[in-house]
Image 1 (spheres, rainbow, N blue to C red):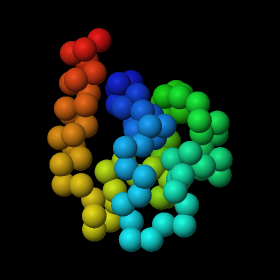
Image 2 (image 1 turned 90 degrees about the vertical axis):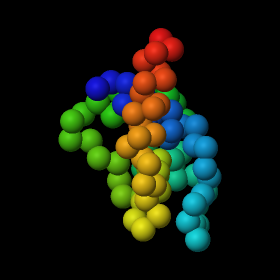
Image 3 (image 1 turned 135 degrees about the vertical axis):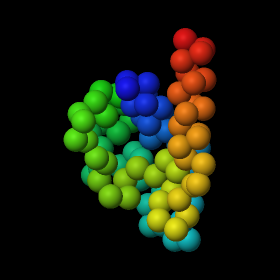
Image 4 (image 1 turned 180 degrees about the vertical axis):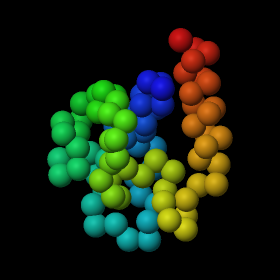
Length: 87
């Protein structure tokens, strides 16, 4: 679904949380040239490939590992519904 790709790209470009780890040596993981092509451009088409998977630790929308958000699926549903209803 294309709207999921838009939500993920918005979360990547306009991160609401700059860091949630105990220690992080870079504060711009979502905007790093090493991980993303043209990181400061909004391009949801990058998510369109069915086999696309961001490089490990390069996209942290709902954290990961032991600190993974338990409400991440509900949050995605709400974000997609809000975007659909407001368009």
